[in-house]
Image 1 (cartoon, each protein chain N blue to C red):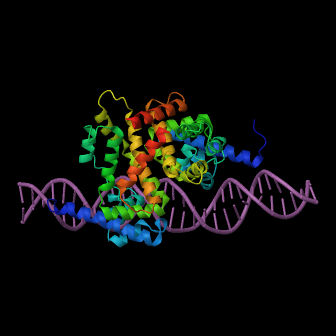
Image 2 (cartoon, protein in one colour):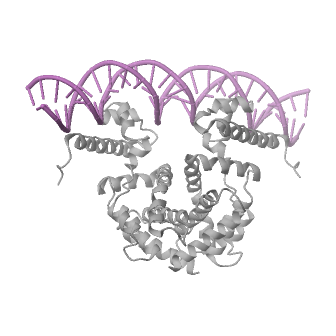
Image 3 (tube, rainbow over the protein chains, first blue to last red):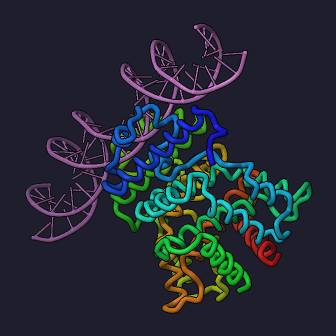
Length: 197
Length: 197
DNA sequence: ACGCGAGTTGCAGTCCGTGCAAAGTTGCAC
DNA sequence: GTGCAACTTTGCACGGACTGCAACTCGCGT
């Protein structure tokens, strides 16, 4: 399941994962602020400088942040108006696809998630990361809505941000158990109830 | 309109505002990243160390971030179940009260806002700041909902975050013109339309 | 085998942010 | 107003994040 990529690419991914894992190990032991980038690099056997070729910051290494996969199948489906044709529901699908299939792998994702529970700064950082990529979501939404959108793309994109974040927080609140999709469904349900008054 | 506070408190506020203003002046001229804290302090005639007695970071100085006014009248009204009794509408009022009456003054708020338009990092920072204070919003919501909430407090709080942020972004998108309340109303309207399908 | 280009590394340097203790201010009681 | 207690400012020293640069290594196509 893996070898159509060159050695270069494979090494790169291995290194990134090694860095994330090293970060997780150390942070779980000592806490986010007590761990220096230098320590992480020692653990992963990489130079400090290299670390910053992979991640913009220490926090990003914990979260495993990676350039956004713009061209995901779920993204194009959404842009094309699917899968159901109802904007909110499809938004739910889009968000759900990221929750189900994180670009960095399930276990790493869960560990990152667990750490973020204990280090509120990371929650904020995650939010900021999402915000930085909002432009791409806006593009997706614009593509879907066409030339004369009757909905405001930036508001829809912000709503996506809300869904994602609220899902995370609710997930965390319930002890990290269960599937992401269920928590997402809960959030959407709450939203509907709230708006319905 | 001002003198029931001691000299100490007045000086403190003056300094804070001086620092914010100095920051705004320099950042508007040279851009956020080109301005060092040292330069700001030189401009405001204060030691570097003092700067960090007032703000946690350079970004916070631009945004004029200040400890959250938990005990605002709007907050207590909301907690008590007012003003209308409809959760979403009252949330709108709560958010609106912050937009209308920023703790740092209208002009400074507008300038901060204008700068944030050009420096996306600040938008993210603002979001993060809000997130850090979510605990207090959750408390407000819990107080309002009582012991057996049929709505999830954290989801409601996240929604408040969404409303605020979306309003900002939409405001920015329309060139910073108009009243905050109008943009907020727009966002709420969009949300209702979106959920209604 | 060989050269190109991507990736890595060390190094020097900038800036952010903090702890501490000394020095300066303000508030208050008398 | 004097003196003391509480608070603020400041300088200093320091740790650590992050960047630019230039040399180097090494996979990859030919």
